[in-house]
Length: 184
Image 1: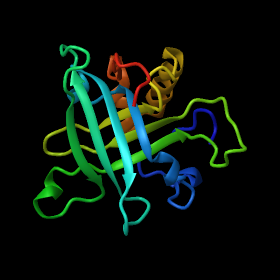
Image 2: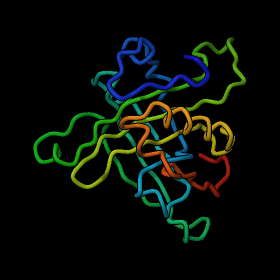
Image 3: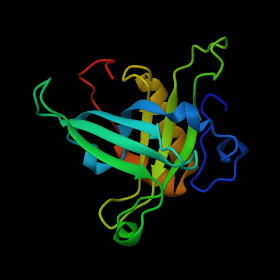
């Protein structure tokens, strides 16, 4: 992908086609460094860890979300939410959010290949009965993306308009503090 190639939800861009997305490189822990989701407004140290589920398609994985309240002391217990990233069943359908990649930059799969570019992902979540639609920006480490780079993401999303432009307007995307440094 280009350094800052982003797409609208439900895009048919080749780089977002299921056969092209390197799902194995999405696995592991990501820091949510910026978001439009109100639930993160008073949180810090937000991480999402994706793990493969044996016997499931590569597009389905477990997720573990951890976060602390901004007012909590460093080292105090974190909150955890476990889930599965796929379509909900039964009553879960009413609260399941449709999650999509809008863009990413991931490290090369070959150990011999190197890249100095930081890893990042921009995700879109459709609305549910309980949450509005929103966007998150992930990075492998909390300091990997400069404020200027995040500002560039916001500008690009604003220019795209529609369901990704509206949430980021007027400061709608905010940085999430990470006080725990680069620890997993």
